[in-house]
Length: 325
Length: 294
Image (cartoon, rainbow over all chains, first blue to last red; front, side, top):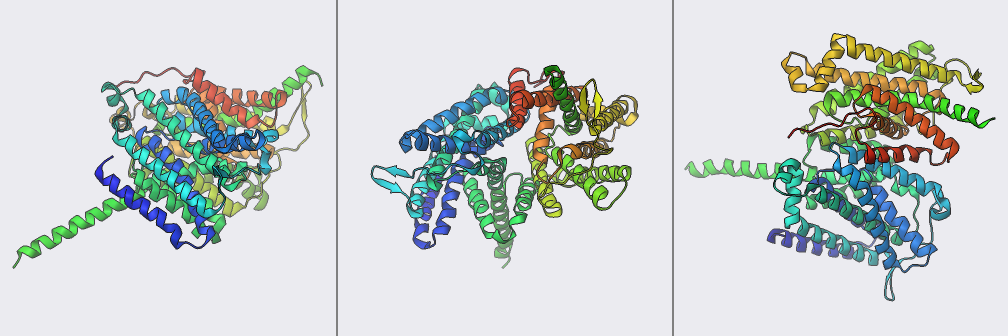
């Protein structure tokens, strides 16, 4: 990780941990807590999209697997919270591995469809297997997260925990992409064949990154379950998968800082647009399409680029006038 | 009812839905061959076909045949708009970006449909009554006959179009190699335009003939797109005969699975089949493995 990223990260952490001091309203904290969880999912997904060149439309399923596995293990089988959470992400990772093997080998966009199909299967199982999952009416009574005797049961406590985890995930991911593995992945996303010729085991990297991103989604899902203490299948439908993909695209594929911008923006947006709830789907579609058509590199990098151009133009304008007298 | 008769009944109903899957799969193939992208909005075309038909036929009281063609025309226009709008103006022509644009477009179509038509399911009366016909002891709905008939007609017409007409051959040439086709003077742009028109129209036909059986609502598109895509993969992506075989096979397997195993997991079964095919034989039943040149 470069020096610049280290400084950004410090500033970012400072801002993040100052925000709750300014917010009195629990509802605002709740929205931000959800944003922190989304950031964990989106960073994982961006590693896959930006560095392995693959799109998954099934991350809601991994998010959901984490949530339901955690919920069932703790509530039904009496597991302690943290071991349940770890077991949940081990299982989710194994599932992702099993799906990744056949689909990542293929060229084209099979992963898009296979993950989407997987999302639908998981969603249907959540609804139909009601003896285990509680069916369409959901699963209630999930215990809160706890550390020793400390229970994370208020929005404020949760805020610090979730944002600390999301910053840790960001730090590890920044480290990953600037390491040897990260450079190999960047090569792979640029030109898979060239990377292969240069000795990068592209299949292994793609599979590993897919599993990592699924594990991050699962982690976020488990945290979500223990935070809200009630889950129902609706949260884990295909629409959530699409939302997180949109967040990555808005922030720019391959830009982890962009992902944070995209996630926070798109998590807050529906809250601001509460009055026009029926238009929510439409707005989501317009944002996704608009960004892809006009800013294929992402809205965040697009804005940065425009700003840099203006600065350069301004400098060029001032230069001749300085010479004139 | 004897077991064989029951099986036969499942088989017939499977062929009915399978026919519409085949039409959706062909729509996928046509756009894929012309542009290399997976058009996610294919399922929305099907939904729109049903919706427009309900509007024209049941609300505006346009006679059946007229409403049919009007609905097909409207959806074809929407197919064209998709191509002329976002796909053509995309700054990046990377396949992955274009695929995601069709995903975005499908969400827009879904959102608009929800606003225009509301959230309630809509239904259409069957084309010719509801008295089942007895065929070898099994009850067959007249609408099923319509579906078979129209599907066979459409597939035959498409076959003729692609094999015998100059335009159809030009479209196949574009599918084989866009560059060589352009070099021989084929207007590639117009062929792409045509492929979206055709896919829109095909989706509409599938939606119109299916609606009397399954009803329709603003949110059925994604599921139908996935079924059609699974069918296309099953048969061999990009191949027309493959799309037909895949569609019918998927319909029958799904119907047998729902009847014999569990109807709750009917939709999951289609994707299980998709995953198994991707695992065992990614080129599909009729597809040939492709070598990639570097």
